Image (cartoon, rainbow, N blue to C red; front, side):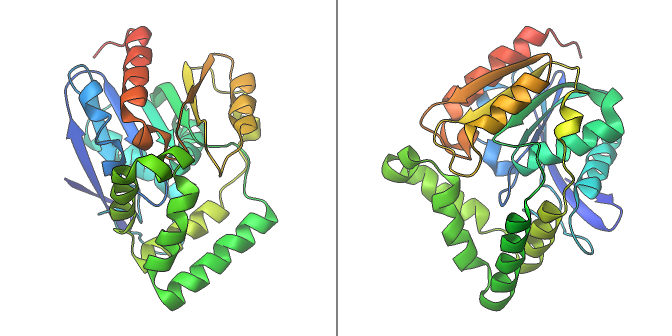
Length: 266
């Protein structure tokens, strides 16, 4: 299904029935990131799975795919599906989107899952590296960039012994276009710092970190856990930055148990 949101057409899928749970994928992936977690959730929850703008089958629109644009896309999607409040889960860029969504639309948030993400903005060095990546993608196309990201995003266990997951990740990421990658990277570089936002979050929050995450240090998850009063921290074993994708059985069961504990009503 598709929804027009300002200057971009946003793709989304809906699975299951029950209280709404919105699942946001990481960069540079799409809604298929959650495929193997869905069986643990869809018999009890209505799962909403968008492709963020510039990812998958969603258009990038004009200019940078900023966190503000993503948040407004998400609000428009909830309006379209007549969702008043929901649990929102975000991985990496999905978490950055949810910090912005919380600032703008907090009455719509019943609970949060913040996975493999951080509250801090990019450093000057990180922003410069993103700009360099954009230039290389525009010159050489997406494939070299995607190939370079696989070993950074997946944990050592997956790279060594879960070749099916490695190939599935590569196929999923290969859906990205030059324009989409550029828009997404520009938006990531421009995202605001959200450290001061953490102490305003007063809903139940599950924080997930990958045991083998090379991109985001475990201390970032600890900072979020220490700053969000009603939070729970869990480490996904044998997983990197794509933790829920690499260990879907562990993540799916964990999410199901935590969601059930919230006692949500339709």
